[in-house]
Amino acid sequence: MSEVEVAAEVEEELHHPHKGSGEKPYPNQIYAWYVVGILVVAYTFSFIDRQILSLLVGPMKRDLGISDTQMSLLQGFAFALFYCLAGLPIGRMVDRRNRVNIISLGVFIWSVMTALCGTAHAYWQLFLYRMGVGVGEAALSPAAYSMIADYFPPKRLGFALGVYGMGVYIGAGLALIIGAAVIGLVSNGGDFVIPVFGEVYAWQLTFLIVGLPGILIALWVWTVKEPERRGYMRKEIAADGTEKAVDVPVSEVLAYMRANWKTIVPLNLCYALSAMMAYGVAAWVPTFFVRTYEWTYPQAGWWYGWIIVVFGTTGVVAGGWLGDVLTSRGIRNGRMMVCAFTGLAALPFTVLYPLMDSPWVALLLICFSTFFATFTTGAGPSAMQELMPNQMRGFASAALIFVVSIVGLGLGPTSIALATDYVFGDEMMLRYSLVYVPAVILLIAVAAGLAGLKPYIRSLDYLKRWSEEHEK
Image (cartoon, rainbow, N blue to C red):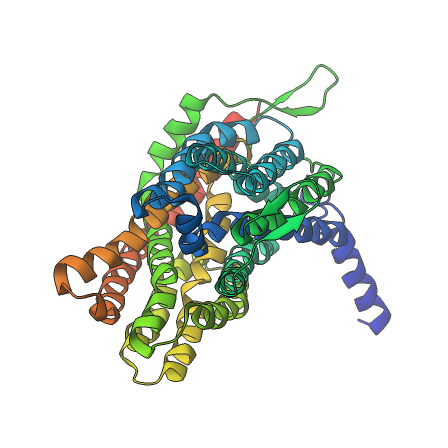
């Protein structure tokens, strides 16, 4: 084949992939990556808005006169409960309604609510606004996962979802970096006077700065084209002779998930436990550096923030890419394999860094731990999209996020704190909690992933049979 013919073939594949499969070609891939870029920006801001509160604890307690318990309710209960409860009905809407509009409205709601946190002068106001942040953010990922699966052919889906997943680590890392800067501002004293809002504290200014740009992002999302739904789905022949996707009742969605529980439960458990380890470590690493190496919080937050931004993003993209490569080479459960085995790669670095005498060696090991631990974030969502019919993907993704939020956000940080307080009984023994708790969690996650490898293949066969039975 000549160079001209090869170039023409590459150009055709770029603009019209998956042609000739009986379906319409996938959308222009340049535009598809543009959409992913917008979604990454939205995801980044969602995690900044979600995580920033944890780094403003000291200034907010001082200025509002609230307790540790009240702060923990703002960080956990107010956000996570409504994030989880709203996620399932929103996931159902994703399977039936315009996903672009759902995301745009969600971004608008959480951005306005975050900015309103910067105007709060009472605890009850903050509580209500954090509830609103949770409801708004619940709309993003179920709809984004479903949309991306309709923008990209299966052989590129893992990589595309991995790129989208970068937003988690860019946002979480920037939250640490921004929080470190705010702590520095507060330590220098003084408040700020800005137009419209008047005199505000540094922490209030932070909420305004990270919240208000989201309104523009919501408008940007609204300009995106809603992709045509494709893949395995229930269809019927319309009066004009064309195929039309029809609604799948929630009872049938639940029945489908029950029929494939031997795959879905291990996948959810593996992904959730990986998140539990990640959230737990992220919550305590800055404090570990302060207690063990006598660093300041701004110093620890700055260094750890950049590690998350760089190595978290590369890890999640690599995980999605590796799942695609294994699948394209005929390993049908390749995405599940990535979820199962990369925890083993992260394990030695995860258990060694807390034991290091040098903070710089510890940071180096954290780089590798973060890189391998985030592979699951790239492979897990693409595995769920691969397993489910199109009209069930939103609900299944919302269920996955629900489990991850309860196990990861709810138990991750607390599990390490409980080990420090009640097993070792000394806050200076935090380093040993960071050795044993993540190690146990990772090993259970690996076991769950291994348990799902064979059922995963059976579920792919089940999906094909289901589609054939429901095409009328």
